[in-house]
Image 1 (cartoon, helix red, strand yellow):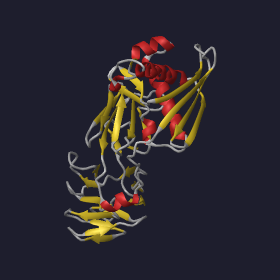
Image 2 (cartoon, rainbow, N blue to C red; image 1 turned 120 degrees about the vertical axis):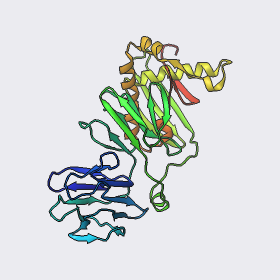
Image 3 (cartoon, rainbow, N blue to C red; image 1 turned 30 degrees about the vertical axis):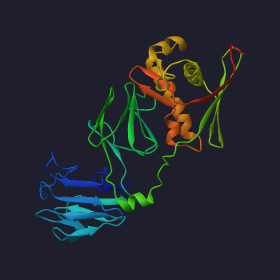
Image 4 (cartoon, rainbow, N blue to C red; image 1 turned 180 degrees about the horizontal axis):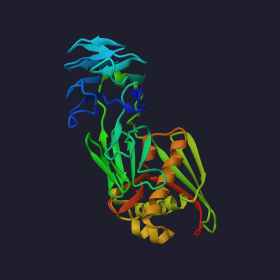
Length: 310
């Protein structure tokens, strides 16, 4: 992702699709502290193919020690050096000029911005309270214990360890041409469980269309087994189809002897396992579905071999 580095302080910043520089703290994405800079000094934005700098200051902006003409747009190249307001101001070097990505921008100063790629766990992988990923329709969503929420720019995400807000990337036709998008076609997914007689060992394989994904034997597969049995039980009942498989989280915690935090960790470990598996689709990431106080396995085709009842 596009990155500027201050060659004096070694500070790095990730460029938003429209990034403002200046001394006005309420309007600037990056605050300038040198007295020669203006309240709204300059902007750098992505036009779909290139990063463009536009000066709007009194004292000027310098690219490789050459003044950018007020109001004109200048294409930035990799390794360009930028100075805001004076030639003796700090030098910002463009060390990456890739296209912009969606971001999680920290509210607290002790946290770092996060580029959104594949799946992100907040506040961290050890104690995941939220999971951020792209839905099958390529929209970024936040999954928490309250369910799944689509994200819009400015959305605040708060955890016990701190808060971030979501910054979406503008849609540019050229950018979209260069980005491989996840297909929105619903794929056929089958889950196959192989369970030992004492149910101490649960193996899981997933058939994605014609590709077999062997997830092996993991402790967290027992949670999936419970959800699978509930789904199959409801499929045999008169319950409405959209209600199949939902289970109360507190009931599950009692059944497998875990608190809710460790239940979340089990779900996180399964998602992490899916990330390492190939091929990976966002439809796979949504196998476990949530709503307030409940979770379920979001699959209709399930096969279970072995277990107590075999």
